[in-house]
Image 1 (cartoon, rainbow, N blue to C red):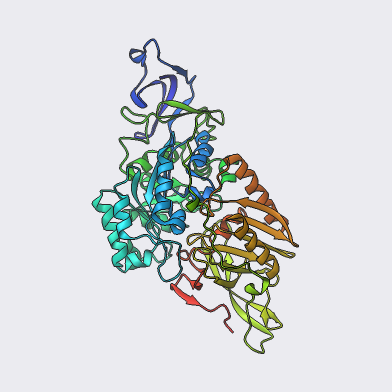
Image 2 (cartoon, helix red, strand yellow; image 1 turned 90 degrees about the vertical axis):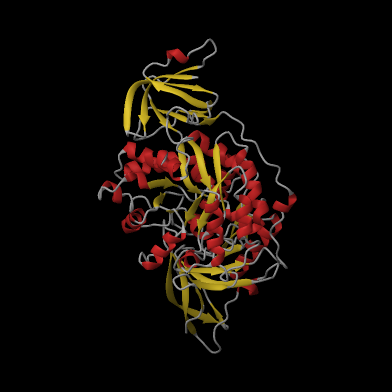
Length: 571
């Protein structure tokens, strides 16, 4: 194949060079220059760029396929038309449900795809030992074993940041096993403390971090020798507040990487993937060539793959995008490994599927059907009202706020009221029958409703949020019946259902169908009074006990600022 007459975007030198050709053979780039006619033979496929830009295939430096509610195959099919040709994915969601076997299934299907899906071995299941109970635990021996698999690129985000800072032997053993294999340790430092604790975390080995939310976070990570990964997911809007480290402070952009972290299938199908992230970075004032570096060569270099991916230079995999504009970035032609895989928004290749066994499909284990009484929060004897600790949702960010509200009591039960809804964590791995109840604010729900999801980062039990206990029971029992997913009930009627039979996390249906069901689910949230942007993502993270400030787990209400359990009722 020869692509002729294009503008060569060279991310090594940050140049856009007109009137260049790219010659490709055996899936790799053989030559880039003004005239590739010496590479032409009788069977050479000629693609005329007609003055369009030739840019490297886009790389997502940190993401979770399960957050798309899709299998690796369907995720690939959804993002290929958007120009994503390389992904660095951490399947720690399925690790919490199915352990090492689940990770291997994700890894194997990833290797079957026509684009590059590199797997990071999950590091933290549970994410915070002693704070939650998972379906399976990941051990240092598991990490050492996985480092020998062909598609493993490194260790997934090290979420137990207090453990690393305090030299926890298990965490350091996992890091050591990764480093012995010569691979990269992913980071997750979700704390505003950038002093000695952060320095200790960096010393422990994590080489990147995506949990920053402000300019100071990005600057400190880069100053301490980390790559600052800044994200735009379906609900995490953390680029605008951090990219100023480059656009205004003038720091070296080669130490910053763009990523998505969590994008659900509605975003992928309707809005885009890494092309959406690059466009957003440009809209935030970033030079287009710098933004492209952050989504290509920076990522490749960080993972030790600069000789494989990330640029249009000889010897690299022939992952090429043709686009007519660098700022708006229309993805017109996508080439992966020397084959045209997408044209004008249509995927042109097969994305092979793994045969997911029954052991991966029957994972919602609840002892009994639930009733409204299971969601009761009892008040202290004789109380007419209480002061309660309440999880406060923050729009477009992963952190929550630890709030307190005065709540009424009726017949000895504390009542959700006004802007405060009830939240419950229903255990679904070992059928213990555990239901932990608490309160949450910020969704804005009105009327008599409930929403339940078996996507409940990271332990992935079942999160139920509602204004009525009976509706909460209906929603929880519905997911027990269908084997996992997301459902919304209002006034006893199911408004939306997204079935996720694989580990209670992923659909086995085409991406477009899942996206349509997801959009119906988000519309149902709006119909129940919620006005938050992509509030489903906020819902699914309410049990993530490694991001401040307040979360719920199967063991209780967790103050992530201190990593201690706290009471629901203050007084």
